[in-house]
Length: 596
Image (cartoon, rainbow, N blue to C red; front, side, top):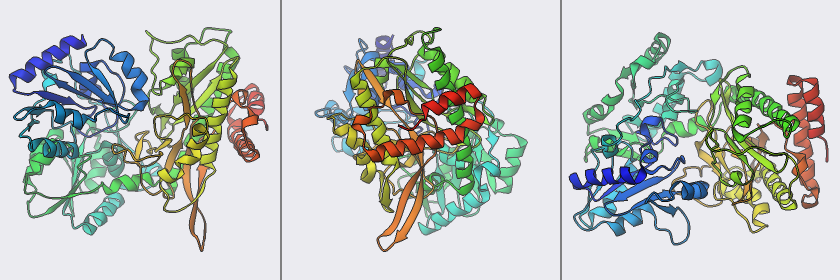
C-alpha cells in the first residue's frame, strides 16, 4: 500500500515538474499533534509516530524522526521503500542536507505551504536558491491521491470561565498589546492553536486530546480578529468575544486578510509558527518583526487561580491512578488483563472524577520489552497479555476543567530481575534529585538536567529525549518554552529561564531494546525561595501524587538523602489521597507508601 501511494505521488510530482516533495508532521498551525485531516505523512508512509518528516524524490524516500521513535519507525517502515534517518545520530544527514545533496540545479522542491513553517521555508529557499533550485508551495499533492481523506472537524467550542482561567480575555489582550508597543508593532499575527485558545479563553475538540479550535488571530492596537468556523461558537462565546473587541471571520479568510495589512506598519509574528503560505501572502516588502508570541511566556507562567486549580486536578488524577494500580496489583494473574484493558480501566477511573473532560494524550500502556519504545501504542490488533511477572509502564494524563495532567508509573507485576531493580532505582533517584533542586533564578533546563541524568549516565546509559517539558492549562500536554534537557535541540523551543509559576515534567527513564523500559514522571511547579546577597533562589513543588512501586526499589543504590526524599513524598501521597479511597484501598496504600 505504501509503495503504491509513493508511486502515485511520484507520478503527480513528475506531472507538476517537482523533483522532491516534503511532508512534515504538521497542520496549518505547526501543532505538535494534528487532527486526522492533516495526517498526510502517516497516510503516505505508514509511520504512526507523532513526530517526523518524509521527503520523497523521484527515486528515493526518507523519514526523519527523533530518538523517541527509532525502534517504532524501523518496524513500521520495513519493506516500505522509505529509509529511516535517525535525527541527531552521528553520520546521519539532516533533512536539509539531504535535499541540498539530492537536488540538482534547476530542480523544484514542492510542499504545501500551509503545513511548513515560514522559518523552515525561508531557510530552504535560501540554501537552494544559490543552486537555482526553486520552491513550489501552492499544491497539496497528497490531497489528490487521498480519496477518503477525513473532513475538517466541526466540534463545538466551549468557554473557559474565569474561575478556571484566572484572567479575562480583555486583560490578556491588554498584556499582549503592551508587548506589541514595546516592539513598535501595529499588528500581531498568531497561528498557534494553544496560544489562541489561552488568549481568548476558549477550548474545543479539533485535535484529539488537545482541547483547541482550528483558528488564526490578528491583533491590532484596538481590535482583534479571530478566524475560525463560526458554527463552532455558541451565542455565549460570541457575546464574550464581542465584549472583548473581537471580530469573527471565516477560517480560510486569513490568507486574503493578511494581504490587506499596510506595508508601512510593523507586523509581529513568529516565523517558527506562522506557515509559509501566510508569510508569502504578506509580500516581500512587509515590515516583519520575527519574535516569539508574547502569549507563549504568559501562558507558561500559571497565575494563582490556575495553580490552585491544578493542585485540585492532580489530586483527582492521583486518585484515579492509585485506584488503577491497586486494581492491577489485586487482579494480575487472576483474570486476563492486557495492555489495552489496563489502559481502558485507567481511563474509566479518570472519567469518574468530577470535571474530567478527556485524556490529555493517548495512554502508553507498555509491558516489558514494549516499554523500550518510548511512545509505544497498544491496539486491539497488537497488544501484550500481562502476566504476574515483569513490569508495566503506564504514561497517561487527563484534561480537567482544573487543568492538564501527565504522569508515568512503572508497576511491578511479579518477579523482576536484579537489572530491572537497579535501573528502576536509578530512574527514581534521577526524578527525586531534580525535584529536590535548589537553584538561582536565571537557570534554564540545561543547567539542571544533569541532576536527573547523572544516575543514568553513571551506568553508561542514556535516554534519547528530554527529561521534561512544560504542560499547558487545559491545553497541550507539551508546552513551550520551559523544559529540561542536556543539550540544545533546535526544533525544541524549551530553553527559557525557569520562572515562578511554570509547570514542568520530571521524567527520566531507562530503555533497553528487547528487554524493558522504565520511566517515573511527576509534574513540578517552580517557586521562588530565599532571596539573599547571592540572588533569588528557586525550588520545585511536587504537583503529582501517586505511589511509586517500592517492590522495584533497591536501597543499596540510594543515599540517605534520596531515601528521605522518597519517604517524604510518599507521606504526602498518603495524606492527600487517602480521604478519597475505600478502606481496602487505603490499607494497601498505607503499605505501598511505607517508610523504607
